[in-house]
Length: 292
Image (cartoon, rainbow, N blue to C red; front, side):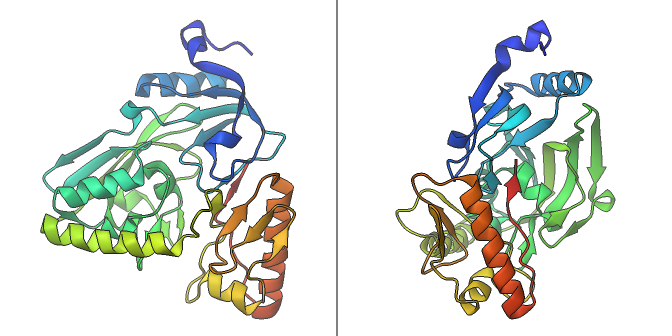
């Protein structure tokens, strides 16, 4: 397939995807593009749709597993600065879908706006956080979301307001649409106090992460009333290994990949854990992982 001439300079063929993911696993994308503007993003989606090329959006790569066969469509990276702009007007913050969630949180707190500080330490982009309704400390991003501007995979733009969206525990009804931007209604607060609170949370969450292990993900969602770590420990699976991947022996909610790890290793370990936890506790651990 040949993309329209004005887009061809954006397209890379057979781009390796492993470097874009936290696990550093996976094969290439048939087509890969990093649009530098909203207009380029829309044009790329519309061109791929017209050519019946499947589309995937690459966020921070923190909850993504790519198979060695790669992806036979178009992968869009939203890392360009223009797709992650953040604006604050009084108590409303608006961010591009490609904005890092951590940047949005620190911007809000620095401006003395409360309502997002609890999300500090959660990796990924605003778009990904909204798709999965990122939550921490009993609160989620959906609670402060005022509106979301979406781009469908057919290239159609729409805006959904608060009463037109549904957010539940670690889930939203935004579907496969690409988040172009989102507005959040926050509350005025003392920036010094908000910053202190955020810094304490950041220290705690950093301390929970395995040290000196760069290739780490959290493959499971904590179910209501329990934690994945506790359930895994109850099932006697702390430190379990499959090929070149394992669960951290101290913090078993983390999956660690070593040199030579494959997507098959990851999926096999996840299956073992889910089966045994279900057998021991009756709880079906839900995946916090997108698989391409």
